[in-house]
Length: 271
Ligand SMILES: NC(=O)c1ccc[n+]([C@@H]2O[C@H](COP(=O)([O-])OP(=O)(O)OC[C@H]3O[C@@H](n4cnc5c(N)ncnc54)[C@H](OP(=O)(O)O)[C@@H]3O)[C@@H](O)[C@H]2O)c1
Image (cartoon, rainbow, N blue to C red; front, side):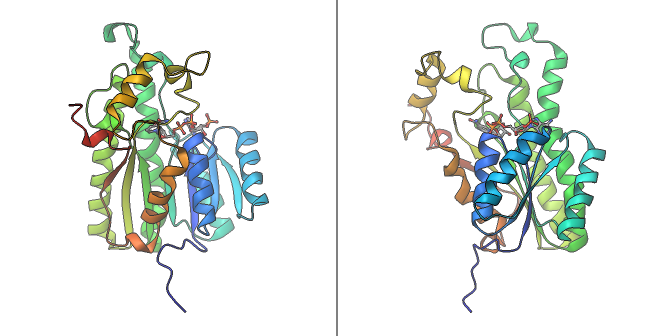
């Protein structure tokens, strides 16, 4: 039989934020490649609805409920997934995003409440770090696994208005490299940790910043498009191929990377 290095047939994947815009697209893509999916978020109804849709399309999917910043809840989910499917092969950390109260688009950074900055950092840094440790432990025990974090263009240079988010995503890039190195050195070449860094996509958490009441681009959107050589926003399904690849045996020597998927945004000086 011909080996299929890109196949995820029979793999067990946990996708945090698995019913969000980007997480939902990645869940469907992993399912299409053959993985069984546990969709994780805080709202059971929303998770169940998304899982039912995947099941209707022939994917083996379940809903699991946890807050990504709560290690006890995540351990309970890990036990639930392992008792159902005996293993965890893939973790995609897609829960995250901006917190409106932590933004300083129209105000001074000095007026942003510190607790809002802590909240956005906790969601975007701890909210990937804690699940990676909880599920990574199971991967270390079984000797194989692939973790994919979702970084951002905000990790590379200053994106106005989103200081806490940017700091958290920059930390996430370092965490991706740190954990990749540590797990490979201590647990061998079967466990890999990578990240994708999406450019700009219109999703639930940023719609009101990128589109006005008539659905037209805001001034911020126009600046983004101007700085994106491909001249458009990305589509969530355009993130799928890279994540399928990173989770598959085709990427067996790839660890510690942060891969931009950004229409050229990060390559462009703006001149
Ligand atoms: N949109 C973009 O342009 C863009 C660009 C670069 C990177 N990203 C990153 O891509 C990821 C997904 O973003 P998105 O735009 O697809 O967001 P989204 O549509 O708002 O989805 C976010 C998901 O995360 C879940 N979530 C939020 N807080 C959680 C928590 N504390 N515990 C568990 N689940 C939680 C939400 O479900 P519940 O609220 O029901 O729990 C939801 O399913 C984020 O990390 C974001 O920073 C987005």
